[in-house]
Amino acid sequence: QEHQEVLTRLKSIPGIGNKTALMLVVLTDGFERFTSGSELCSYAGLTPVIKRSGSSVTGRSKISKMGNQKLRNLLFMCSFNACKYNKACRDIYERLVAKGKSKK
Image 1 (cartoon, one colour):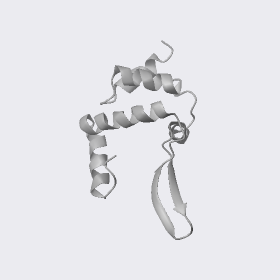
Image 2: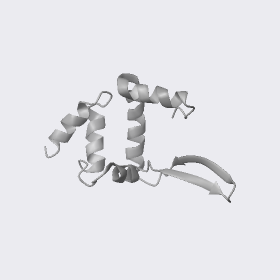
Image 3: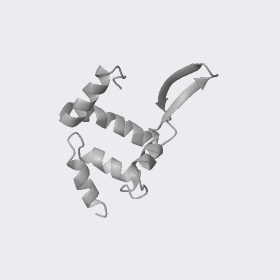
Image 4: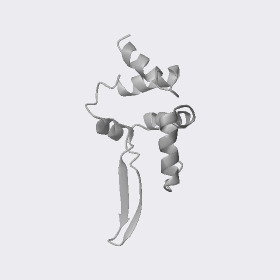
């Protein structure tokens, strides 16, 4: 009952259901721990890391995967539903894929 308002807001997002909203609140303590979006990204392990070997070889950037694995997996699965049901997310997804970004 403490986080009922947060649950209601999360459920209003197309592609996020009851179980997903509940898990997001549980894994983040109702988003009360974080003062910014970058802190939440770091906690989930979604911040980019560039792997380099020497001075001339630059690899592709990937996510760090140093954060909460359950939260990261939950957000990954939600992104598929968001691309399917949320028009704004689908437009962003199609724009990034058209630029040559990975479909994941």
